[in-house]
Image 1 (cartoon, one colour):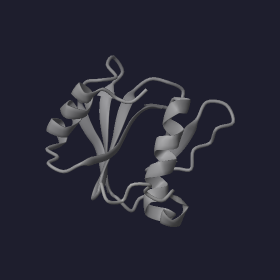
Image 2 (image 1 turned 90 degrees about the vertical axis):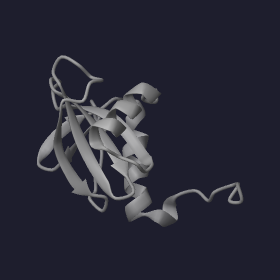
Image 3 (image 1 turned 120 degrees about the vertical axis):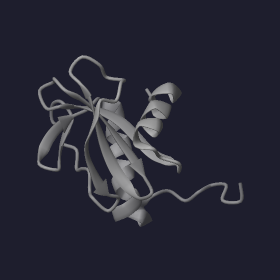
Image 4 (image 1 turned 45 degrees about the horizontal axis):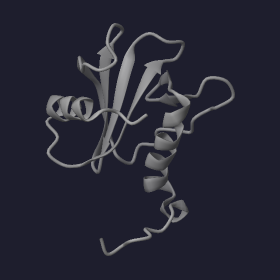
Length: 120
């Protein structure tokens, strides 16, 4: 399920982003616990901590990384998880495609489907 517009806007305001959010997805520390929101723009990847009690209220910026930083790969043997910036994160199955698309946009542009309506 896509993240709600109010949550996207809270993240936008929290980070002071004026431009487009390309990708956004929630994650947890591996094994559950602390919540995070990954916000990907054209320039950077921001990881926001939401704490253990809330999954939708930004608390602090855990880290900011250049957009050229790889997020995946996502291991999908049991619970989908990935290693990023020295920490392990788990995420819901539905967000695996988001991580893969964000990485493909930077590292494998030729693997992305062509825009079927490029003039719009």
